[in-house]
Length: 420
Image (cartoon, rainbow, N blue to C red; front, side):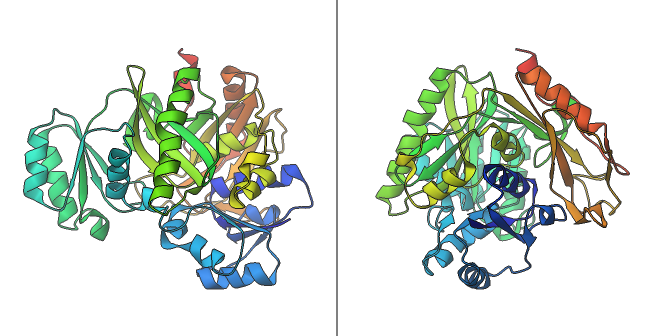
């Protein structure tokens, strides 16, 4: 197949690896890709949807896979469908599940999907009154996309009201914060579940757990994710079944009822409180770094999975996963997540560690000329093994062979599973 992958991060690199594992006959293109994806296929510089669609037609692209949320919420799937092209991802209407937190929360409420009590408003006074009814801590969210930064966990009512004021004024997140969601804080543990959907059918992937904080023991600021592992032993059969019946199935049914059937990856951010599930958020694409640990666990052809979902034919596919665990450790640049880090050369020792590989993200250059740091999260060291301990050991063994000035990474990824 000729396959076009939209995006430039570790998620897109991991998808490319999975597609090439199926068959070397897959010919991959990345738009725009990164310094390392050029070793998996061909990077192209086109960005606007019409040019990308024309490229797909001219190069006989059989399938396009969209990685990031921005092109999905802006309507790339609709643009490709207008040209009769096969593309994996939700329409602009369906992508509102991520593009608007207000739409998402009201959709959850309308379809009786469990979530935290909330208020959505553009009125400081109404938000302030609602905050007064809550116990600290509490959560304030900007409505629109904020690159994962539009959520504030306020430790007291004054802090929550200040967050609302800053968002509504445009000071915090610009137009994305001109309406806000205020909600109760749920005290439990978080999980990430992903469902591959074709509008009617779905495949639920093994549950993953992300590590958002910069430093060990979940200290420091929130980040885009410093590592992940899957599957997590914190999920039992009861939780999987509850997610299917109380979340995924009513979501697919509800989206069809509003004429926005959901095709693509449905990310479900869950909070488990005393064994009960609550939806924190939806995303409409793979999480990063969760994607990097889920792809190696996929035993079924990734090409078949994405293509059949894009062509609304999941019912004909039986999906299997390896009975293994994957652990991914993000190696980040010197100043991440505070500010841009200098571009410095990267070297990786020429060693082979069983069950371990690198997924490249924020890198520029090429393998031939040398890779350089080109982003906050630079790469991931991924270990796959028979259990969490073996997978973690392999991932960290690989980390020791990565070298660049100022590199940082957590030393405790998957600690929740090991402490069980």
